[in-house]
Length: 210
Image 1 (cartoon, one colour):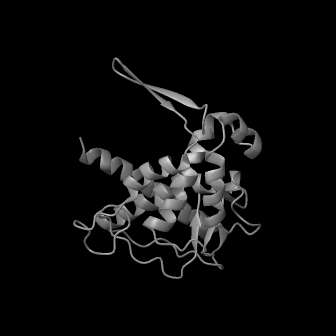
Image 2 (cartoon, rainbow, N blue to C red):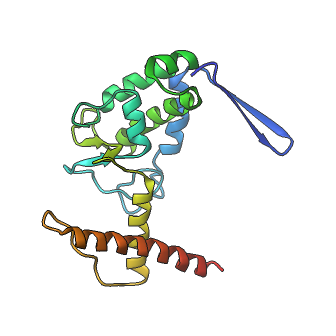
């Protein structure tokens, strides 16, 4: 967005980023980071660079954290939380073409997040379609900021990631299976196990790098 300038200092050098209200230029830069590396892609197919990714198939996907906030700010979800990629893409181009003041007033986005919202909206649409292979008219992505009042954010993903690391490097008994009939007591035990895993992996990783 224009009129949104940001300065960055490195040593004795100051770099000033000036908003140009040109979503196409921004998208060109983003695409460079998301392009595939066909020569080093193995096994195929790959999503970004040479990182393997299987087909998205017919599963339902849930987008959380910044995906949900940007989709909500630009009103790109329906009443059920389903993400409309095409609407997000079109709205992103309109939003990014505005001045910082106009963007903040029309979309109720705080000025300090003005350019970030523009960049993330363009990035999300390009990531989902170009990199992950979702059709632009897909109905299989839902975007939520919370469930039953509980925030969905990156810590949940971090816990799952660390649990997988622990299971791979330090095999342990499986967690309780969670299903519709799981009691509150079992659920609490499962969550406690996950939190314990998170702390344990942090300690183990720290020890490995000493």
